[in-house]
Length: 437
Image (cartoon, rainbow, N blue to C red; front, top):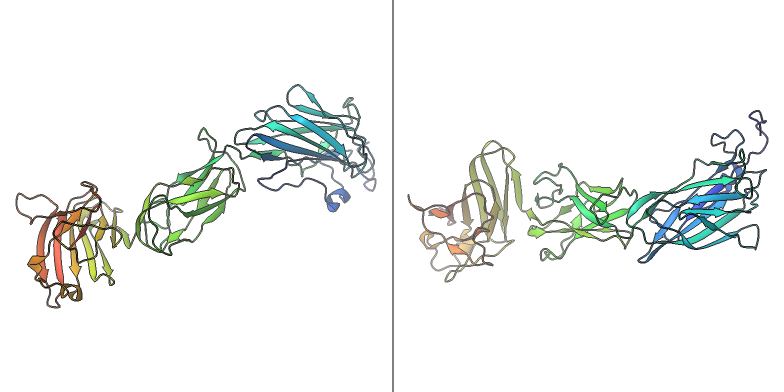
């Protein structure tokens, strides 16, 4: 056709759709009524266009494919086509072909190891040819196909090639062999606040989950739904606890971000589990993190935080001096246990964490103090344990401080006029301690 063809003359367009039994992301396979009715130039003066849509189904042993060719040209027949399988997907086998305009099966053949050729199609406007087959199971990845279509029945000659419709989709995803991985791990956060990948900062960089192949390389899959949940493999979850906030996201170029998930109950060593909507994609478990009653980022100089626990009648307070700005200080009460032989811990167990040496006070309410017959301040001891001396919940009674006694040691025991008992002790930095009185 000449370039000066009148605009009212129907153009010829053909469509190629490649489909597979299972989709990761739904793709259009066949022409809609609107697509067949429209006139598409695709940059071709003659208006000869093709549309290609490719889909794959990843199985445990093989990947299946379906290629659908649709003629969208109103005046010319679609005679032949060649579809090239991307490198990495293997050589197609078990191929079959059918057309919508004839009960006679068409006959796909293989040129070399990767090009599927279909001849003598004779497809009129709106007619389709569908080629199916099997590929050896490919590894997790994103693959680009290519297709060429001609008016001639024997795929010969020049000047009779069709041009691909802009709506063509030639990219396919293989999810078999994919796995999820936390590219940005969850960090410690305060109870009920957003969890990011930066300790104590709800506005920090988000938790990120990536899709990887077995080599650990990120696979740029877009549109895969990822969901976060609380993992039971790391800690015993508090009763009724759940993950709130942003817990579902879809991947963009192989990664999904979660800006503000939160947890309402304090506990040590939570983990998150990431799972994909595609069951063949292996899930991932994050590294452990803590949810604290109180978590503050220290200013320059002295840093202080306090955690009141009315249910246990305990107030835990921590003071550190000359800390680096931004240093996290965390306190929780009742998330861990500690015991010392011959003594009963009457306060709530205070778990705290700061990198610098600190002074810790545990205040026990009068109502709790009065439950003990020996309730003078001098009777109270500090039962202490830390990651520097782990032994289940077994703790050590702290000595009183002296000129030769290093931290941790008891600084003072006092009883207020209100009848509360306060025990103060020094604590070394760089440990993960817990203590009860």
